[in-house]
Structure formats: C-alpha cells, structure tokens
Image 1: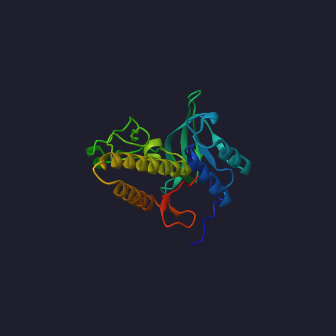
Image 2: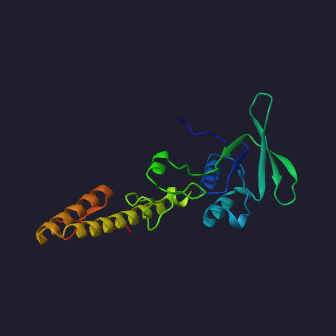
Image 3: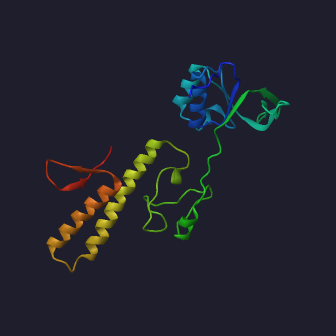
Length: 220
C-alpha cells in the first residue's frame, strides 16, 4: 500500500516520550509541515531521550510544553478540527487547528491475574517488584517494561540477560546443595546438563574452543 501523504495535514501528537518523537519524525518524512507534540511536562523533563528531541527539532518538529489537552473539536462531518488545550502555567485555553491527531501517551502496566495468584507483588504503578530480578515468588524472575515501565528495548535485552544469569546461579547453588548424596561424577554431569538446558532456554548457547561442552555466554 502507498504511504500516506501528510503534506496538507496539520499534525498534532499527544505525548512526550520516545514513541511521540518517533511519530513526529515519521510525520515529517511523510511530508507534514512542523508536526507538534503536546506535552504536559517542561522541555527539560520530557520522557524522550534528549538527543531524539533535539534531532526532531532540527528536522522541523515542534514541542508545546506544559499544556494539557482538554478536548478534541470536530467539524460537522465528524472529522477532527482541532485540539482544545490549556496552559499549565497561566491557565489560558485555546484551540490548535489539526487535521490529524496521534495519541502516543498513557503507558501503564496492568498486573496479570495469574501473576497475582502466584504471589508476585506490584507497585502503585502496576510494575512488578523485584530483588535482583527475582519476584516475591522465588521461582519467577522479571525484567524489562514489566518492571521499569516504558523504557528502551535495549534495557529489556540487558534485563533478560541478567535475569538468565541469576536463574543459572540460583539453580546451580540449589542443585549443588541437593546433590550431596550423589557421587562427584554425577554432580558434574547434572550441573553441565543444567547449564546446557538454561542456555538453550535463554537462546544464548555457544561453543567455545571447539569443545562440545555448551556454556552460557553474555551478549554484551
């Protein structure tokens, strides 16, 4: 399908995070003239990365800081006509004309019922509470947006790696403590098998030095 042409569209984006900035820059590439983000926060406290905000501004995007969106106005045919906003500084209201409104805000985690049933605890924002990636249920580990809230994918990748390492350490310690009744050769075989299993489960299995033994390795 052909990409939309926004060269005649007045574009507003609700939000101040990385997703909102992506929407602004995409709108620019589709021909929009000065798409504008409506932000409740001040410019120095936007959720988006400072570098991304600066890049969007350099390309022609605008940011209206410290304003609240009040209501969407419509034309008689039902299409969007504008956005009623109110300044958080002086309380003045005005209507911004708009042809396209993109909503890119409002991330809030919702605790899954099955996690609650398993004893996993959450904070007031609905994010899982952890201690070194271990939840209140010692058999469940967590990371990424479920713990941090809206954040970068790369941090979720790191959380997954760190959680896998913690799982490996935990299983090795607990299994070693339970193998005192077995001969040493059995302990080594079982622990090596456990390392292989967790490596396969986490997708970070590798071979080193041409040896057939599998070891868990780090992404970064």
